[in-house]
Image (tube, rainbow over all chains, first blue to last red; front, side):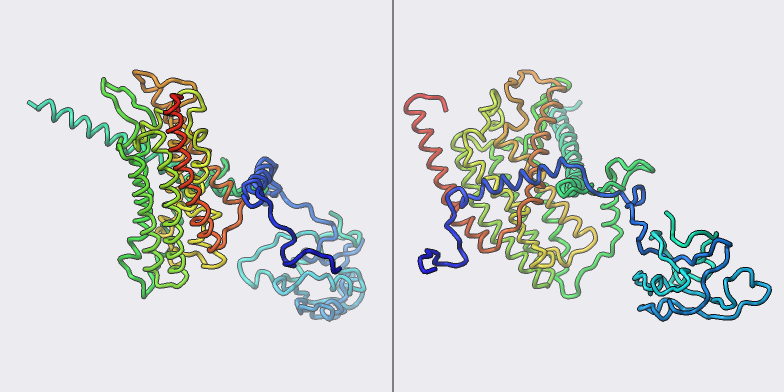
Length: 169
Length: 361
């Protein structure tokens, strides 16, 4: 391209008089902002209005029960192994004979703790679980007044009633 | 027995005190709500709501109590004076800025005269016959507050902000003064009340129609004087942290902020007075014996005009990006000052021409 007339590669063309005045451009910009002034704000007023989240949203965990109300978790510690943030702590144990009707097998998790402050909500525990016991739910509003209060134990995590394995919203 | 002249001067004192306090309260209320308005307008311009939580009880009322909450917060904050700061100047600077801005209100005609108990009361703190000069002089005193604050903070960013303010304000004061020279040539007086009365009548009597160039120059320089957005280099936050008020906290910072908004509000009043007919209503003649109602109407009309300009201040702020420092001085000295001088000669020439051919200007 030898016939190009551009001398300064950074300047494509000389500004015309009206462009050098800048006033038309300023007016155009002001018109743009003014149209936005009369548009409806897109804000979601949080505590009153809430964002609709997907049913696949990865919020806080739930430990599911099966159709008979038995705990699905067998304490295999696959989730603990899968957890990249080391948020899950499980102590597995054998089910006492008198509680056998509450569990699917002889093995169960004696304690099951998730440190929600460590958790990165990646959902790998959900993928690793062979028993479809742990799921992440769309529930995202949890606060704690101390670090300890956000370490959720089995009682807080376990679903109160049994049912299908997928979280219904 | 009281001497009649003493009674009269006492009545004068009382009426002036009442008018002064009234205007002071109205201006401060407008200024307080200008801070809320700025944030609301910023919000709406960006498709947000702006502050809308500080209401009464369950009713949010568009955040109507936000200025009170802000003020309370300012007073509750820790007041920090840096160790190596010049303490006297450091404390004096925000006060000075605020006062310099507030004194402008003394000369602005906020309304026509009203007749109460057989006495004519001007809705103006002082009808100075050098009103424009007074306002220019007092308005430029605001530079000292900012420069003092910048220097006394013992912080390089503050100092840079202060220095920038000084050169910016001095440059644009020239433009402002020159633009007003043309206006004063036309009106033949620097008394603001006279200028307002001369603009009554049809809408084309407003000076903005006879001085479009002068208005543009004046308006641009007002933005620079108030250090508002395209020219807010004194506090350019991405270069200077917060400029001259980097080290200020608590109510001292609040006073700086309040001073800026006072300056802006009164500058809006000043623009409305000079170029948009002040308190007069287009096509409505100024009555011979104005009553209280006319006083209230004229007061309201000025504020409507002023609030519009206040809105434009905020609108521009959330539209335009900031100038670079050399661009600012380039614009001031190489473009606006020659234009302002040209405007003076143009106005003077046109007036001479009109007088020669006997056309009323």
